[in-house]
Length: 194
Image 1: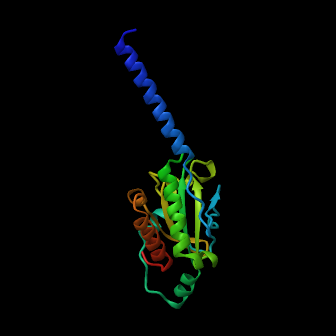
Image 2: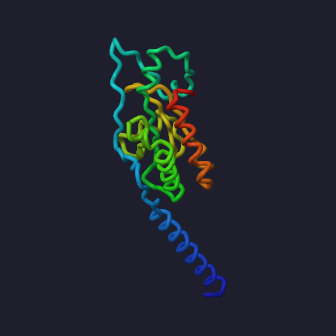
Image 3: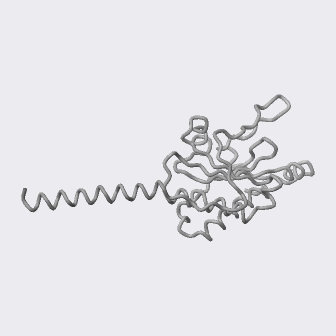
């Protein structure tokens, strides 16, 4: 073999070993466990009951994202008091270091910003693998192109509004801005504002 072929072979082996090392590190990267709020990892999230004649049909997630709030009557205020916001973190089977970071930051945002609301059931965090067959509908429901965070407002079992937080990918390098954004969006939905 000549020197050129040997050099090419050595460089190829080096590149393959480097890529393998990077992939192994990405797979093994785990966020540090957080004290306090522990996100739930579920196969299936309880879905609202099918509407009956007495119950109006709730807005689909695509319709609910674009709804606007109306003046609050006493009945509407009582319903808003029973409102709950679910912060979803959607992931797949393969998760990179940034994916783990997004989950950890989302958990911290909910834990530090809504501890009392989590205790009384007004705010909840759910971590869901959308590649599991029972959860594939979320991709369509929330128009997920990427793994993402979605906050959704429920009144009773009826979903009223939701927002996909695509900014999480841009803010993954700025923890404070990330947490502030997730807390602001969760707070806005909790108050019933769009």
